[in-house]
Every structure is written in structure tokens, then in C-alpha cells.
Image 1: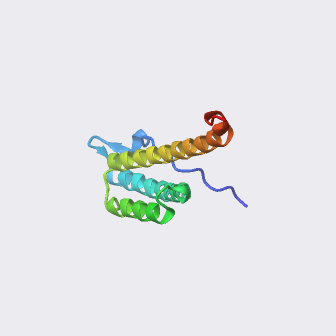
Image 2: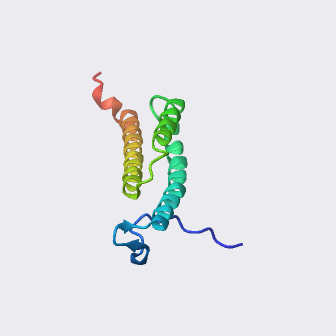
Image 3: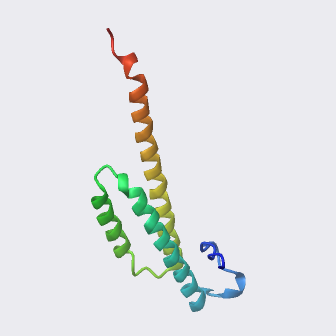
Length: 118
């Protein structure tokens, strides 16, 4: 069975696909297609991270869906890249939130005796 293809790369397209005006129509379609594939994967990762969201998984899922639907008609390759970078930032922030939550729980568990006086 062949290996699955590598994840799409969203860097600049090769020089031969550009014209003097910037991106050609074919290059724009290629960037949009790569972005859609990438966004679907990001959606799944964000849903996974949203399971433990403080306001609940349902709230997170509704907000995520509304953001994706709001930006479904974006066609500009640069705007698509900005939105993907924003999604990656949100993922990093969620991970930091969960690590902080875990750290606070561990700190409370192990150091709660030192704060109490007998």
C-alpha cells in the first residue's frame, strides 16, 4: 500500500507558476486547493483541542464552525495564509492554556500543604 502524500506546504509557489502580475489563475486555484486541504486538517486538530475548552466542547465547536463559515468565500491567497496563521496561533494558545491548567492542578495537588498552617 503506498504511503499517504505529505501535508501541503503553504510557502510561495514555484517561480514558473507566476506571471508579471503576481499569481496566475491556475496558481491561485492551486493555493486555494492546498489551503482547503490544510484547513480541513486544522479543523480536526482544533476540534480535538476544543474537547477540554473551559466553556465546553459544544461552545467551542459552534464558534469554530462559525469562523470557518465566515471565511468560506475568501479567495485571495495572501488572506488565506493569514487566516491559516491565525488558526495556528489559536492552536498554540489553546495548548498553552491546557498546559497552564495542568500545571496549576499539579501545583495545587503537591504544594497545598505548605500554604496551610497548623
